[in-house]
Amino acid sequence: MTPRERLIGARRNAGLSQRAAAEAIGVSRDVLLRAESGEGIRPRHAKLIADFYGVLVTDIWPVEREAA
Image (tube, rainbow, N blue to C red; front, side, top):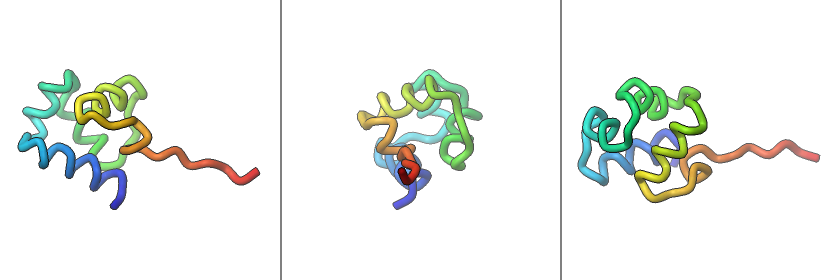
């Protein structure tokens, strides 16, 4: 499952539309739409979204590690 799919799945499992989820999270619908589209968002918005769904930011947006 991709990060995008995890985020959309979390919202749908909560039974929320994008508009309702964004309002409950405290971000604009555009921010949530960008997040669900896989576009970059501000770290503070990522934290708000992850906290709302009860997951870590890295559960939705995995950190890619560079090879040493």
